[in-house]
Length: 363
Image (cartoon, rainbow, N blue to C red):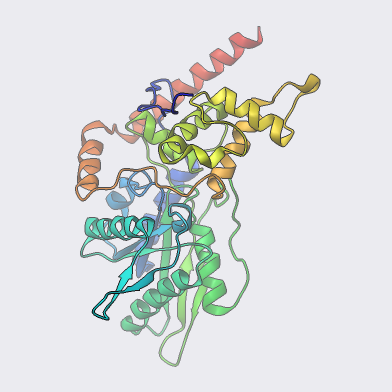
């Protein structure tokens, strides 16, 4: 049997929608600007799996005058689980620390990301890592207490839809003041649709009232410059699953999984580049069948996507990371991004086209 060869490229899908900029996104951003004078620090969340694609230039345009820290969330979903470091003893008695290859890659990746933002601070967070949460709390506490404000410190968490802002707020509150969930979270974007009142994440002392964190709705970019970037954002859950056909998204996920290892889905299928073959195999394996035993490929696609989002089909980064990648991304945005008005017009035209196609199919 010939060795499996994964696809080298994914077809360009020019018909994909290129925006998800909704009314409450614009309203939320406007209110953030109004509140800026009351805010001491901005925590901007970006998805670790798409550190370039989950950057929203509108934040820098609208909120650029305020000090910020970039927090890369969902770190655990972008890193392979590795063995602990080990040591070997050389003949001369000296011990050498051995770092596993996957961990070396992650260390190098995070070093590059810090270079992108130097001298601004960068933090990395996994929802399941108390150490990461405590690191962010220490940063917030140090920043707040250095200001010596009797009324306490007000911080704001911002980011694209579904990058983990509310989850981070809840984790900081739980670890910082020992209290339960304050912000709603969910698998789909748009759970937070308005700006919250401040939630205490650090207790005060005799000099200050403490630290309060304000949750905000996710704000999508007015226009996504290329189709693959839209696929990445959809795969990570920044747009609702109804915007892009689940089978299309599952096909892109299969393409990316095969670049890592086809063994990630060996429980369901032999290595394949055909998404329908994989989805049918998943349907039979998981019981997602319609009347007559026909595989429900759309339900299987949604299941496959959700399994990846929760870390059950591999932990890997979708963006290509290099020292000049951020500069290239900014240059591309400046050349290709239309105005917000143009983006809204295009969204309207895309909705009309989708509705016309839907009406034609129902005739």
